[in-house]
Image 1 (spheres, rainbow, N blue to C red):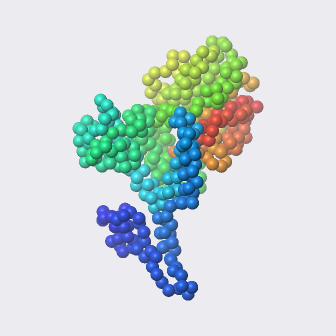
Image 2 (tube, rainbow, N blue to C red; image 1 turned 90 degrees about the vertical axis):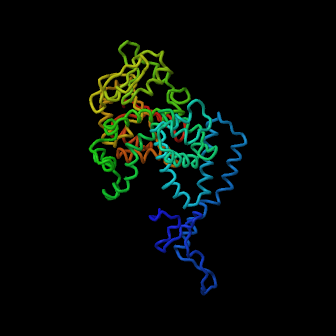
Image 3 (cartoon, rainbow, N blue to C red; image 1 turned 135 degrees about the vertical axis):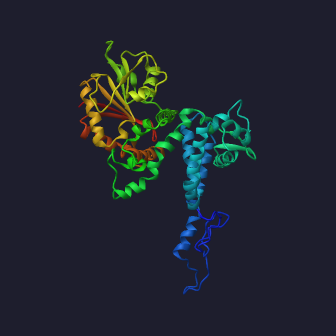
Length: 452
């Protein structure tokens, strides 16, 4: 952005930002005599023309037709139709935007929105917007309620409204949307200050770390992009615990991530009764499900709700600092302090379960974790259930690819393809993949493993 604070950026005589925001070159389309009588443009002129043209104008008519076709029978209760329509709507926006607009969105609008939302969560703005009722409230009134300077709040809320995250009803007056209402809930709102304080710098400085190591793929979880970005010897999880309230906020963020996603415990995903409960030992001390690294118990609590009448112990394992953050938990679930880099204390369980554990670590570290599970498994009886993304070879979903780069920046690890899972689980860890259970692109799979 221009250092003189003006909108034209022309003080050095090189470019003219134009007050209408088109950022076109001042020398654009200059007539000149040529041998064939046609106007020729310089590479810079041609590049400027591309930068202010739609990204893919040719695709617009077919995308509109697809939206119309889906929209004619749209029902908000039909999630498949909603997802298809969302894909086409994003495609339409991407096609209509110019490269210049996309660049400004990435570099100005979206980072500013994240900062504004984080400020709103930290100050209780979104809760204040819901106080008494969700009717429109003035910036002046909200400023008093959240103890934020009115001018700062006005600028923050103006951008949130421009981005569509709150609704402007009059000058300096706003009402909430469903999105901003959700920001008042910790499992949605807490992700913003958590990632702002303990994750995003690792992504923003990934390019400098990659340059530092010669643009090779990072492989060290102890001296990787995260340590470079935060100038720390700690890993991501240790850093969050060492900088409260980032740890509890991350637990809320993970709970929010799980909302509305298909669950492997449901009948149309993984046949729990047939593959897990049937044939399980009925003795009082027999473990049915051991949730390794299960955080504050989101998954195993869901299992207790859906299959709580089954025989066998339900055990939640994680580090003491994590288990200490649990407020309430189903009384059937045992809490057990455990570090998965050490010997598994519960041998012969029907199923050992890990959700989003292995994606936090490169293959050599995963092999150590899996060895401890493998040693505890009973041949012909125990299963290992891994609930993670299996990225398809083509047309991967943006949630999975975004998370893959997040794993790269935070842990020097990855989201894995089917071939990469096979290499890790079978070739390196010595397990056998029975089946990869899937319900759709962009949804985490369940990888069922046994001893060979």
